[in-house]
Length: 151
Image 1 (cartoon, rainbow, N blue to C red):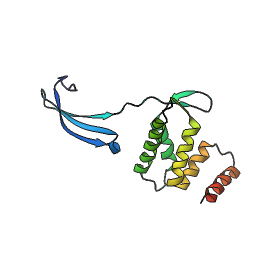
Image 2: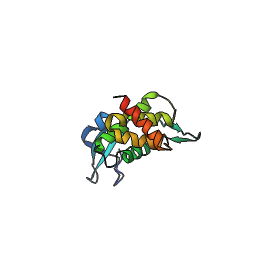
Image 3: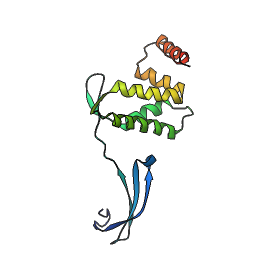
Image 4: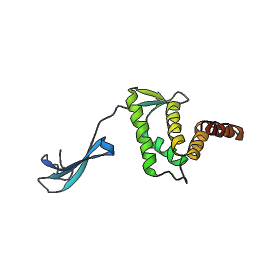
C-alpha cells in the first residue's frame, strides 16, 4: 500500500482489528520512509443494486436514504442510533444476499416497516404514513387497528 503522504510504496501493517461486526478490517499502517501513520479499511466489494422506483425510474441503492428515512421516523423517540444503524445494516445485508441486480422500492419499504414495527410502533406508523401516502385519518386508523390486531 502506497503512503498517502510521501507516495512511498513500502508501508507496513502496525495493527489489524475487525470492525462492523466482522464485515470489515481496520488496519493501521506506517510508512517506512516518512514515518507517518494512516488507517485503511478492507471491506468486501459489493455489487451495485438498482432500485426500481414507483414511477419506473432506476437508481443505485443509497444506504444514506434508508438511514435518513428511518432517522426521521424515529425522531424524538427512544430509539438509539446504534439500533437504527443495525436496522440499516440488516436491510443492506439482506439486499446483498438476494443476489438480485434490481429490487423494487416497495420491497425495501416493507423491509424497513417490518424492522420498525419490532423496534418502535410510533416510528413504524410515522414511516408507514409517508411510505404508504396516507391521505386521511381513516387510513391512519386502519393501520393502527392492524398494528393492534397483530398483538
